[in-house]
Image 1 (cartoon, rainbow, N blue to C red):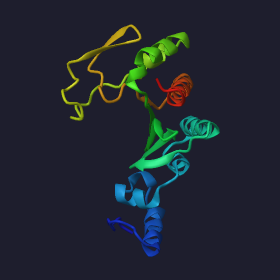
Image 2: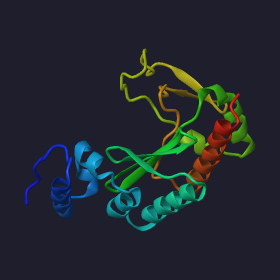
Image 3: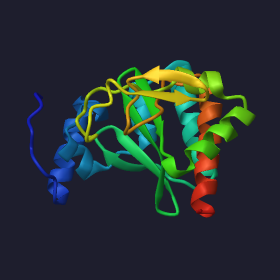
Image 4: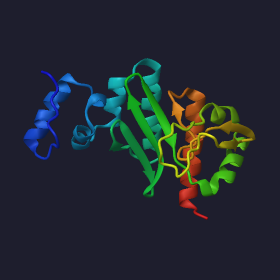
Length: 192
């Protein structure tokens, strides 16, 4: 069966049709509207798109997130958000043969966060996961020419919307993300 865009799936019959489409397609290849109707579980997408150590690492990370009482909630095509007390803590994106974690944090706490990361000896991991501007146009002025000092090291072209993105994170990167999540949860629970 060749894929056809069936639009928004508002009733049970259309959901059955969507399941039939999915039998021949990966969740990650479904359109935004199809994923919105289905709201796929992140574990299903991980198992479908990743394998081996990468799959185990992603599933273990999801187990960690659930163990601290946060549930991945589908938010966009191939993306899930984790909230704490209604505020964003991180997003996870899953695609064919890869995944990434994009931690959220309040820039009002940036100095304290950097001190926290230094105390926990996370400089190298942070530097390896700086997210560089892709000229998305979301920022009022392009950040391509701007530089930013992160933990004492200067980086050019750092995105002003997203500071960090952990692409196919190794065990050290996952531990660093866990520290970032713990810190973000602390700042949400104890605002300035």
